[in-house]
Amino acid sequence: MPSSLSMSRNLKSGSTLLLVAGALALSACASKAPKELPPEPGPARTTTQPDSGEALGPRPGSQADFAAQMMGDDTIYFDTDKYDIDAMDQQALAKQAQWLMTYPEKRATIEGHADERGTREYNLALGERRANSAKNYLISLGVAASRLTTLSYGKERPVALGSNEQAWAQNRRAVTVTID
Image (cartoon, rainbow, N blue to C red):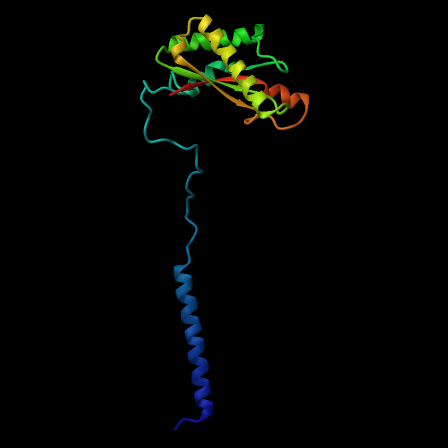
């Protein structure tokens, strides 16, 4: 029967042998640096080329096209408690009418808005008068009345929050939105 001393030596030499074998196995798996590195990544490339007839930008006649063509002239602004069309509004509405005449199948809704001051009922009525003023001017420029509807939001949909003249001025408006 082996002595405890010889068993201890065998365990140590076995453990050492296992440790060396494990280290050799790991070093064999370790990746080595390639002799030549791959090239740096360049700009992304697409594998398909767009058709030459494919349009870039919004689809002609769409709401996105209308907004892009108007460049802010889809909205007209009013003075406090007013709904009359001034010279700046006339220019914006003329631009809208020109676009609508280009796309005679398109319909539009004119949304009337007011600032936060006044009662809900007063502002709904004022928003309606503003929308109707814009609609009537578009009709006077040749847009068929049957293509235009109006809607008043009164003070319910402000674009600018705040209780100051700057915010109020931005909220006193009529916005033309085309219907797709």
